[in-house]
Each structure stands twice: as C-alpha cells, then as structure tokens.
Length: 370
Image 1 (cartoon, rainbow, N blue to C red):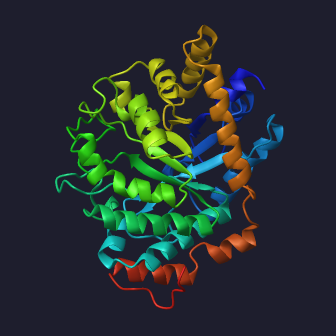
Image 2 (cartoon, rainbow, N blue to C red; image 1 turned 90 degrees about the vertical axis):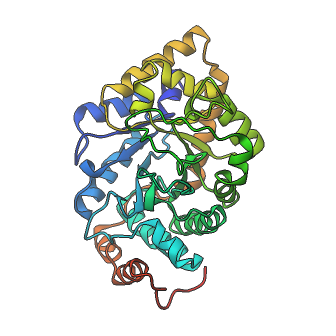
Image 3 (cartoon, rainbow, N blue to C red; image 1 turned 180 degrees about the vertical axis):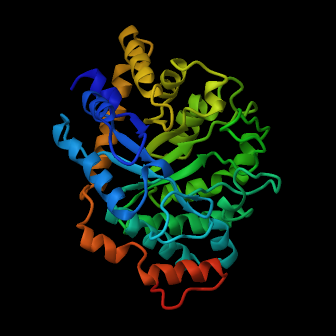
C-alpha cells in the first residue's frame, strides 16, 4: 500500500452533481479516497440517489484494499435535511426534546436510517449533540435537542441506537459543543471563553453519553477555546483531540473534522497547513465538501509533510488501520437495495405517521420499545 493511498483513505470529498464525473472517478481511484459526502446538489429522487451510491460503491472493487467507501450525508431533521420528498421529512431535533420520549427518538433515527441505508447511504453526520445554551445562537437553534445537557445526552443516545439498528454509522457533532457560539464557523472563527470545568459540567455530558453508546465518529468544531488551547482551534488542537477526546474521554472511534473549506479555517490558516496540522493533532479523517480544488492540494501537502518527516508516517498508518477496521466491521452490506425494495421503504406510511406525530408534539402510536 503506497503512502498516497494511505493518505487518500483519510479523506472525505464532495461531488459536483447527480452523478460521478470522469475526473471525480479518476481522483477517487488514483488516491483510494475513503469517503464521499453528499449534499443537496447531489441528491434528487430515490432512483438517482440509489444509482449514484451504487456507482460510488462499485469503485471499491478497483481499489487495492477493496474496502467500501463511506457515503455520508447531513440528515438531522428540520433545517438540515438533504433528502427531500418522497423521502420522509423529519422535524428538527428540538421537537424530540420537547416531546421527551426516548422511544420516539430511537424510532425517529431508526426509520430515517432505514430510508438512507436503502439507497446506499451508510453514514449520517448526526446526531447534533450541541447543548443550546445561548438563545441568540442562530447557527444551532432548533438543531439542538435542548438547553439541558442531560436531556441532550439521553436523546442523543437513543438516536445513536436507532441509527445503529438501521445499519447506519453515526457521527456526534460538533465537539466539544457549538451551542453557545454566535459566530458561524462557515463565515469566521468563533472564540469561546469556556474553561474545562465549564465543558465538563455541560457541553461534554452528551458527547460522553454517545461515546458510551458506541457512536462511530465524532466531528470536531472549528472553535477557539483560548483558556484550554491558546494556540489552536479544536480541529487543529492536540489538546482537544489527543488529551481530551482520546485520553480523558477514552474515545476509540474515528475523529473527523468539520468541513475544512469553512472560513474559520481558510481565512486564518493556509490551505496546505490545515490538513497537515489536523492529522498531526490526531484526527482520522479530513472533510472537504465544496471546493473541488482543495482535496488534491491537501493530499499533496500531506504527502510532502510525510516525505519531510513533519508528519509521522506510523501515526498515519495506525489511523489508516482504524478506518479500515470500522469499514470492515460496520459496512458489511455496502450496496443499495434493489429499487423495488427501496420504493417500499422510502416515504413508508409508518415513517410519515411517526414524523408527523413528533412534529405535532404528540407521541406516535404503536411504537415498540427499543
């Protein structure tokens, strides 16, 4: 396995449209890219999503390690909902907090996950486990379950279990918590004055609960906490990634960055600096969602850093093995279901009833306990 292929497995990339272009296919194959992140521009009706995911997964047969690709999407419910009807439309997570019925939260995630898995999406960048502590925070708002960390923890755990039961991987975000920020990291770098005592008493509570529930990934936030690390934002911080996530929280799953194309990164750090520093800090996977020029440049920067010895090759190889172990253990059926089965699952009347009841603040009828 060449070092280029080891590095490629550490990358998530976005796509331009409803099908793979020749250039995208070539880049994925030549560099053994580990994952794809789908956005609204990539998804339409179920047949198109099914065919795109089938085409993406077919590339694994031409890769050296033959590992399935992660195919991820942001499906939280509410505002962050990439799949449109006839897929079931799910309400915002705040509705689950208001209802406060963990069984409903489990079925919310499970039924959403069944529809995603049917068309070949194997990873949801969810749940959002941020604690909504600042009423002025418009970035998170009703994406958060609650302002009570214990409430967020309880329902986040149920959501993780629901997705897992649907055979969909999960990603808790945005570590260590985006619920207090006023600045949108898409636009600039938020700075928070919390210390570790504050994080331990509030923001970290739901993350620790999802870690115990065996969430597959955790996503780092692009936030500066100068009282904890005066030099680096979370995504680039060894203090947060090694000391807090790995050592103190004892988390052994995958650590993925938020989109490295956000202005919190690009306006403050160099394009070549960011991927190298993130990997040095200990992340497993680099997320590049929108700029098609960024992944090739990032890959070359990491190659150069490895060649020069500023990035430890052994650390990269350890992370590479961790990525492949998750894929082998968790993505045992990578291909989409046949379309006749997909059409029975997507927008299933039972799913629509559950979504509608939760949206109306009612406990859905007939839900079986977990």
